[in-house]
Amino acid sequence: MNRMNNPEGDDPRIIDCHVHFTDLESDGRFLEIMDIANIDKMNLLSTIDALKLNFNPELIYMKRSYPHLFYIFGALEYPAWIYSGTNLDSRRVKRTSLVKQVDELMDIGFDGIKMIEAHARWRKYVGPLNNRRYKEFFKHVESLQFPLLMHARASELGKRSYDTELRRYNEKQYPLWVRQAGWQHPLLKKARIEVADMIQRCPDLKVIFAHFGGLAYVSPEQTPYILDSYKNLYLDVTPGMMMYNWTERRDEWREIFLKYQDRILFGTDVSSRQSLDVAVELIQRVRRFLETEDPVTWGFIPKREPTIGFNLPEHVLRKIYAENFERVVGKNPKELKVEAAIAKCERMAKMMRDAGPWPYRVKNTAEQVGNLLRQNRDD
Image 1: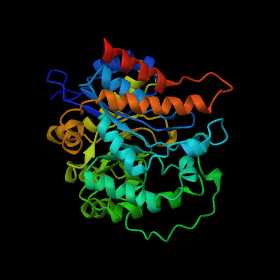
Image 2: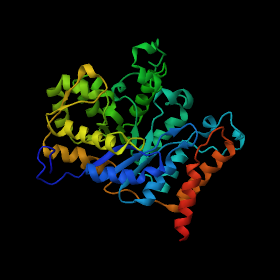
Image 3: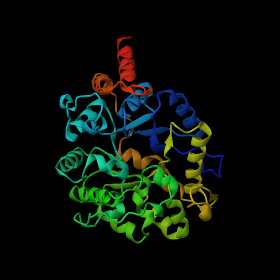
């Protein structure tokens, strides 16, 4: 294995489990990123979108174009409120249950589901995450053992579901960039506990928590209890503020990584909105933190820079970089079922057309991808 401080050896096999792709024209740049940063495969994550419903068509395009390079985790769709107030007659929208949407994603060839609904920005629209339809959804996903990657806090596990009252909200306690992104809201605490409630009801749910599930913001003493209680719960190391907390109690957190080396996945948050240099540097920065004791600067909180990496053993790195993801999701990406993908794109494209005309230019990517799939099928 090629450790970053030992360039003479073989480079490790790496799967980046947390990547965002939202722009069809960025596919060539992604291939270049993977080549320069020595990434073997990427797991592309869809998210809810306020105009297109989600970025599932973009991910379908990448799997169709490069079937051996990309896993894809699809997002759920909520047309009733996304297109509320538009020209789309919501009474004529075919509402697909969350359970049915899971089946559709599996039929198309998605490798898992991405959920950002516990983010405050979206929770206020989708409603309680432990209501009847979500109970059915989580139970169905659990029964299928279909992987789920979530933005939520694993640190809320063990708390009572009735502890969900709105807390007093002082937005000034959060940095400006956090407020501008809409990541904080009075409903945030409520959403986190609702998700924890669902996971406690579905102990066999195969779930990956993004950004280490917020556990770095509690203590290294609490983490073993949660990981020991939920055997199918995994954590990705997609960077955030946790690197600062890990550095402050480095030895204890490093022991957590060693003890739970089978439960941690490599992720970076690389996005198609980033330039080639920025994306490659981000990947290399996360690797430096895991592989060396070199100081690493992130740029989030200058007063707490630099952070000091874990210098993990090679056998642990092999698990974090690829083996754990392959065990949870699969050795290879699933095959795309073209006809099912075309049907999904056509349905999404029609809703977006019917909701228009839009006051500004916006691409109907679902229509574009559907046309490309049909053309390739007929050639």
